[in-house]
Length: 140
Image 1 (cartoon, one colour):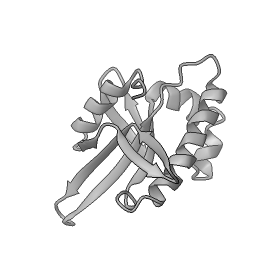
Image 2: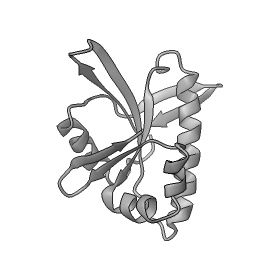
Image 3: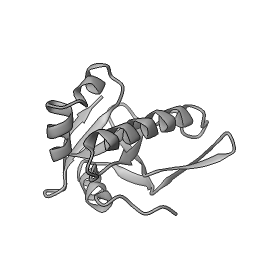
């Protein structure tokens, strides 16, 4: 089992505060005879609509010396996992998000190169404050 991301537990607490139930930690997928592990699977029952929202989340810390390298790796993983979810009958309805800290979002996605990914709708983000352990925004 791979090591958990440095901010894994902080993000899990933030996600629970936001009303989500963690269903998988990690979420196991097998696609094309390859086992994959996405950091989390979660769901939230929407009472008004009487249906479940199901998500999968890959948590990334962006701690290396190169934020661009971290971004390339995170986006590659996001693309691979999104396609794997589409090919997994038990998880086809899950929406994949990349979880990042507020500081990373501000430096890399508001004023940095990551902005082009948001403008082109290439990734979905869930931004969290690791200190308050709260979700600050969901970016579809």
